[in-house]
Length: 177
Ligand SMILES: [Zn+2]
Image 1: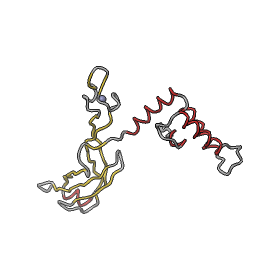
Image 2: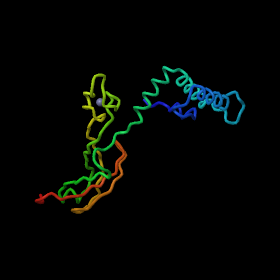
Image 3: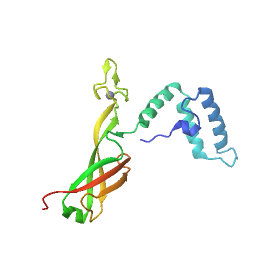
Image 4: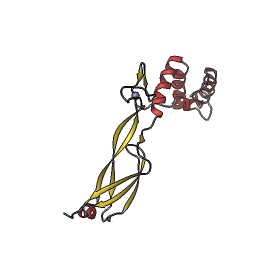
């Protein structure tokens, strides 16, 4: 489920005090209020400002929201240097037709058990062995154009499942089939 960034909605810093949050809320609520008669009156934005205030003005709800927000901000990162270099072994026949290939790349994902700290109550996190990261393989699907040659290098920027720059070197499989 996606959730709005309530700090962005109110235009305040995540470290803002309660008084700063209240001041921002009052200012924006006046501005967007549907009955304000102002040019910026906007029921939808007004509703968002209300929701942001309900979450951020309540210390418990704000603390819970801060924890969720922090988790979301951690992005998976490749465990190999970027751009990622990968050798694609294919037969000359496959190269002549091209097609979609799958490229597996090891990634480090944020460990959700210890929230990336690597620590548990009584020692290192058992789930990630104290690394704060969990190793997983992300599979990228890229399209190889027809007619690539042996030793040709293809350059990709892939957005899914995570953003990565990829250099694929084509290597023909011997002997030819
Ligand atoms: Zn862990």
